[in-house]
Length: 368
Image 1 (cartoon, helix red, strand yellow):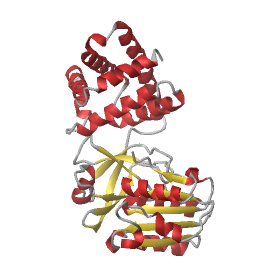
Image 2 (cartoon, rainbow, N blue to C red):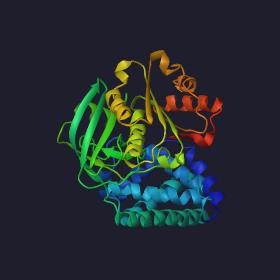
Image 3 (cartoon, one colour):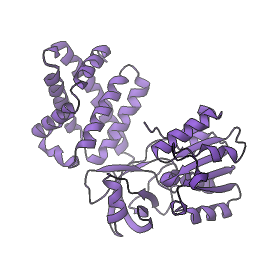
């Protein structure tokens, strides 16, 4: 791209204006292209954060095409579920340049405008091309009819969906979900099962304080409702990362979902390997899926389930479950997968690392 340092410096300068920047951008965009407003949620707070984060990522990686290009391609594919088409990118580009010009003032030189225009042209081109390629193999979204909604606790539900068409995904990948109660508001969930020929997909949902999508799914969702699901993404929690090693799976709460999916994938597709699952919760009610896990262990001798409750689940001051896991065996050479709340994951990964588990054997979602 053009002068990358000039782009970084000008973006940093604009960033000093904080939340005013995305507010101005979206106000300008909706003014010049009102037809795009329905693509966005009513509450724009989270969307403004996503815009700033995406722009920051693009500017940060502008000199690293190996990182930038896959990021842009995924952005392009993700935007298909909002029904974004190539023509919309022109309006976004106009809004971006107008926003930069407004906040940079006299620093917005013709040279800088030319540099940003060239950079945005490259960005938009990569996103459009990825979206067009994806449209040849995937729908913009899948429809999932709710055929089961089982309350497993006052704030937790297991939701079973029947997809309208097959979805190919690896266990551990996540999908974005939109409910009919909150149009254009999406949240990421990881299926609790491996891909099935019957098109059934299971989601484990805990209502998050202050959340929008998860409370709607726990308390308001009913059989017959239809959810929209985006294409599966990510590979941090997939079996591909394990390179065939035996596994130690460490789950807290609904962080169990992707790890149960890994177990199903091994059971159905192999190759067999030794798997130890540690499932931690504050109390027995938190072990909401223990009967199913025991059925899996009974059917698969290579699988061992260890529930951890209360003090046995670790030190709740830092949410780590590492100590009981490390006490339970010598795990030399095994791959560890850790999934749960951000605080549980960061604390457990930290403690496992301090105990000598190599970083390349620790697999977890980025919780920053």
